[in-house]
Structure formats: structure tokens, C-alpha cells
Length: 207
Image (cartoon, rainbow, N blue to C red; front, side, top):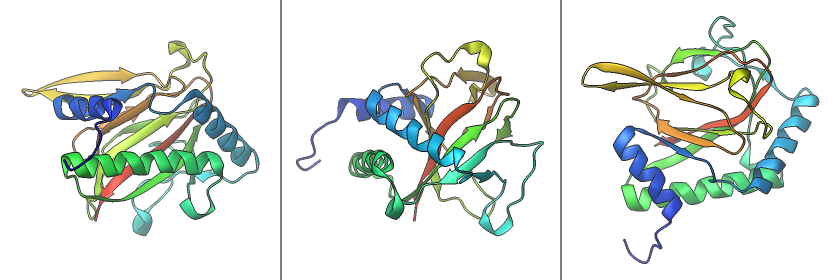
């Protein structure tokens, strides 16, 4: 492994991915980093920079409210503000670590802010397209306020299969929580939200 220094936090994520195909990391980013990202998201959302989300890839995307109801804004590394640069820098460090320790061949990434207004959701789906299987790992980082309660809804439900038996894993969008899972294997959904839900969602992609 050359002179690569082991990162205990990254290693916990890798171990969980190998065992369960998903991982939950509640301290991937610092509290100050999360606060800065939340400020950036809210500022851009209030300036009408977001657009209604669509399903499908860019060549064949369409808005379907019965499937998903969030509003998104893609992050651009070249025009990123300081909070976004710190976010993307840590993601880049994680990618380099994955490639050197797990040989995943991650070559690209894409991330967007996501705002779910009250009453919206995202129906069960898989994070891959029929003509594009480059997405390897899905990542979501929650930017909600600290007092998020279960009755607010908006949990991420991941559907797991074990010997042909399906189970559900419900993950609440607590502030600063990062969830990482295998894009091509795990179907998932966002349950209806009872109040505005904030996050950054993205994918690590192979060539």
C-alpha cells in the first residue's frame, strides 16, 4: 500500500460497504463544514438557483412529480464557493483513498444540492441508467437543522436482500450524517417529508 497512511474513518466505511453494501458516517464532515454548506444551499435556493428534479439521464430526462419532488442545483468545481470547495476536496481525498486501497477505479464524481419541500418524496429506485452503468457509489450528506425528529419523515429507506428475503433499513436525515451505498445493487427511496429536507447527493463514477 506504498506509504499510504490508514484513515480509521475511511476504513470503517469500507468495512461496512464490504459487509452490508452501505455505510453510515455521522462525522465525515465537521460541524463547521456542515454549517457552511447549509448556508450556501439556503442562499442559492432563496435566489431561485434551483430547478425541479427530473428522472432519467441527460439525454432522456423528464419531470415526474409522482416519482420525485425535490429541487436540485448541481455543484460545479470550477465555480464552487469556499464551503463547496472544502466539501469536494474531502470527497476527492476519499476517492483517492478508495482507489488506492480498494482499486475501485473511480474516475469522476457528480454532486448536487437537494431540497425536498414539505409533502415531497422520491419513490423506490436504483441509481443507475439502462445505457450508463458508471455510477458505483451513491453518497448523500444531510444538511438539516440539528433538531430533526422522526415525525418529520424524510427517512432514506434502503432495501436489502439476504438469501432471497427482503428487509428495510430506515435511515433518518440527521444533520451531518453521510450515507454511502452501492449504486448498482441497492434500491432505495426517500419517504414523504413533513418539513423541508436539505442534503447534498452525488455519485462516484468509473470511467
